[in-house]
Image 1: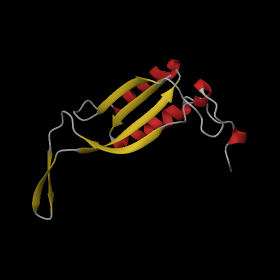
Image 2 (image 1 turned 90 degrees about the vertical axis):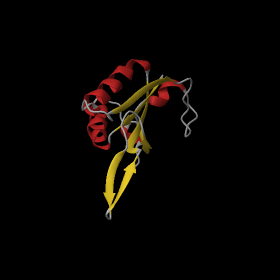
Image 3 (image 1 turned 180 degrees about the horizontal axis):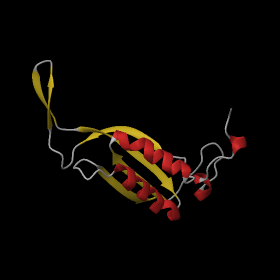
Image 4 (image 1 turned 180 degrees about the vertical axis):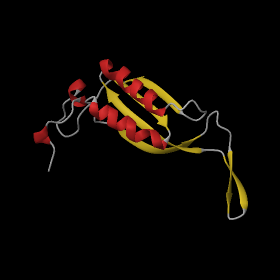
Length: 122
């Protein structure tokens, strides 16, 4: 199993989510994040005062998938998050030793499977 973590611009999220859903990978998490990288601070004006902002808002996207699906996730992120400008973000791929579904206690790659229609509450 692999965990793909990506720091992306907010506007890239919805196209990435839609493509992963279409490819049968509906499970993901997002976290609002702020950070800095190669981007320099940006000067913004607020009520007549100049303010240098050294961290930029990003989304941290996290997806745990079977090894065979890692390339699909990475390609979807690259396709929709790449603008060619500084600040597009980063992707990290990490090994996952174990996954356990809390509700049932089952473990392994079965935990990564999408829910059947009967399991989803109405």
